Length: 278
Image 1 (cartoon, rainbow, N blue to C red):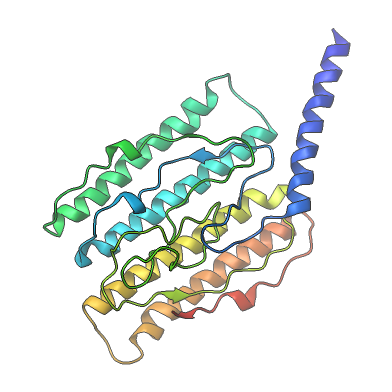
Image 2 (image 1 turned 90 degrees about the horizontal axis):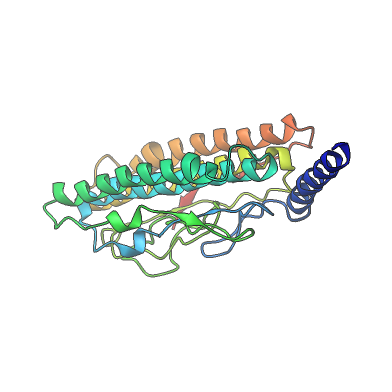
């Protein structure tokens, strides 16, 4: 009985070593919208239907709420991909663990978010879309990145016009004509991060999702400002770009700390905090 036990232990360690090698060799590369990034070596990722490209034209008064919920969908995908990466490195539970502990709760959370998107249409006096079919997620094969909803494209939904994404994949720019005409978007630099140690990958991925969410929220405020201008000439700098810089600085600092905690050299990401406007 001892020999099979040692063999299983060796195989398990070899799997963890392979995952670490893939992460260290390729790092956690960041890409513009549409690039296939963020998969975790041998770990699977969730395969969720994109929502942005399934929506009808979003009324201007509903854009902020819809953008906030699309960002929530992407953040939840990132969170569950972290859990899948941990499960790949340290399996737990029985054969139904992923369905019961990851995919099942993810569907419930997506149902709630999709319902809030529908309510945003209702409140604006528009026909409520039926998004129920977009709640269920499956799994991608190892090495395949999750499709995200990304940031809204500027001024009318031209594909590819969105902000560069930092998340698992970048379907940013697949959006519908949802922004108020003439609305600008924030132009944030993509952080250049060195190869991420395996022990820091989950935290780094979570903070990259936060950066994307912050961009989506800022873009939603810019849409509101375009539709209903308020404040003086410095309103956008003081009320949108300034707070965005502070939030990004905090997220970037947490990425640096994630490197420190695993004994890796702390990268200097301060210069990626400031955003301009497209």
